[in-house]
Structure formats: C-alpha cells, structure tokens
Image (cartoon, rainbow, N blue to C red; front, side):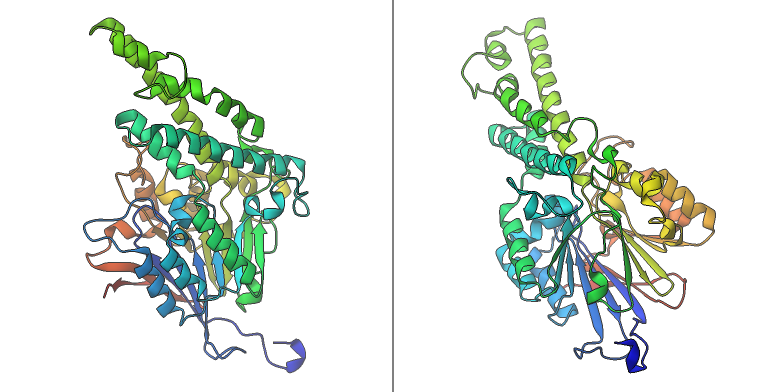
Length: 445
C-alpha cells in the first residue's frame, strides 16, 4: 500500500505456528492472519520452514504426503515463503518424496530461501554472489568435498552392524539428497519473488511477501564475516580431499572384508586366534572406526552451522527460528562487534523454535541467561524424538537439563509429547499482546 493512498500499510492481527510431528526432524508452518483481505484477495500469509525427518514417531507414523496435504489445506493452496534452514535430511527429506514435493510445488511458493552455501553461483568456477569472498567460496567447496567423503564411507559400510553400522548411518545423514535438492531448485526457479541465499545481516525478502512483518537474518555468517564459523579444519577442501585419499586404507581397517587391495587389520583379525591378540586387533579396528566417525561428525557440525537463523517481528511478537545452528554460528550475533545491533531484539523473543531438536550445543547459555534476566515468560517449541542420538545425559537429544531450563522460563511444547493420533501442535496469539500462546492439537483423518 503506497503512502499516498492515505491508508496505513496492512499488518497482521494474529500469528499461528503449526509444528508437525515428523519425529526426529523439523517441519513448521508459520501463518499470519489479517483482519481484511490484502490486494490479492487473501487474508492470510504462510511460511513453511523445513520439511524433513530421519526417524518417524511410532506406532503409527504420519507420512510426508499426509503432512503436505495438511499444509495445502491450511494454506488454501497458496504458500508465500518456503525456507530451508540447511540441507540435512531431517530438514529437507520431504522434498525427496515425489508426491509430497509435487503437493508443495503446487502451492507455488512465491519466495524460496536457503543458506548462502546453497547458492548455485558458488559451484564450479563461479565467482559467487556479491560480498561472498574467497574464504567463503573455499568453505562452500569444502562442504561439497565433505559430503562426497561421507558418501564414500556410507557406500563401503552400509549394511554392517554395531559401531560400523552406526558410522554408516551417520555418514548417510550427510549425503546430499539430490531428489530433494532438484525439487527445491525447480521451485526456486519458478518462484515469482525469486530465490534468496542468505547470510547474516542480509535482507530476507520476506517483507515483500508478508506485509507488516519484519525479519532479521541473524545467521549464518560467512567465513569472511566470522572466520570462527568454519571451525579449524573443515573450511579447507583439501582437508576432505586428503581424507578421501586415505579413505581406502582406513576402511580396510574397519570393514568386515577388505574393500581395497592389501591386507589390513580386518584380515589380521580373521587369522588371529582367540585371546589377547584378537582383542588388540579388534580394538585397533574400532579405533579406526572412531576416527572416521569423528570426521563425519566434523562434517555434521559444519553443515549445522550453515543454518539460516531468522527472527520474525510482528507487532509485539518476536519469533526465533534457528534451524540447527550451533555455537560457532550463534557466536557471530551474540559476541561479534561486527554484527552491530543485529541481535538486539533477541532479548525480546517470546517464541523460540528450539535449535537442533534440543541438543546441548544449539541453545547458547548466553541466550538462556538473557531470557532469564528479562522476567517475561518464554514459549518454546521443540520438534524431537528421544533415543535417536546420544547414549548419556550429556549427549542425549533432547538434553534433559535444557528441556528443564526452558520449562522454567515459561511453556515448552514438544512434538514427542503429542496425544496419540495428533498430527501437529498449533500455537496462536494476537500480535498486540505479549501474553502466552493458546495451544491446540490437530488430529489425523
């Protein structure tokens, strides 16, 4: 609405968040309701944030198709913004399901948002987008090399059990889901407002699709903005290339058979008699497996730190969606002077989508302390499934101490605590207040 028209710009009156029960994954539909119809005749706007899972809830899990159909119904077959925080399967897996992806594509998302690392201009010999320098392009190349490394590990160890089976599963999580990426690329190409590949401080473009809502892009920073985001080794593509060169030898030490020429620990273990020698050989074999697992975990951390962090501001509401961002990503907006006033509104957040399914390394203590000091209640929503990752209290996802801390700050809604037969949690609240959100559960047909 132009200022000369004499009418104030439209602003939403209510915000709603639908958190789908995808088990271990994320799928959130954020909606804004208006009192009057906007220029296109609609009185709602919708943002889909992630659509994936790696482990479904039991005993009767939903399907991607079922969730996609509910999204189509809720949005009245028009999606305004599609956000992919990062490319892990538990955030994009649904786009790899042809029918589910077709249902979302039919909603004709007007704007498609992904992290700067997904920008196609970073591929090959491209110079990359503006303000993304050589260190950033090197980091993006390292992620691609790391994913190929994970693919090689998974191919060699798929089907094995025990520790090596766990390594294969961890590696599979890092492999690019090409069908999902292709579906997202096609939607981005057709989006009327285009595609955006975001980094900290950049304009999101969401304001063009959703009147009366402001959005701050808090992360991820590029290595040029904040070198700490890359860690210490994984920002160098040569790191992964060298590891791929060593991979055949390392796998020969871990696999049941001998996938490469030459004898390794696996062969020696077959010939060793029972007793201390075989015990030592098995320990050496497990040590190699642990080394590979640490490398795969390094890649997972790097990918999580490419997560887009979005802060939505509508009236008196502040809603924070950080994907799976870990401390290296968060530290830019929390600690860097270069970030300026980018994170000032964090203290005013009243709804928090809990990072990384409730893991300990995705919700900074500094952030929690900030919310404690302000004296207002916080509503937190976590999409999670216990028992998938971590064996101890310190490593379990979700972490019990974090869940307890968030409950002390206000209300915590968990998808894994949904009543049987529910497909989602829906929270809603007026943007004119700072009161808590009303909560209801949606059933399944």
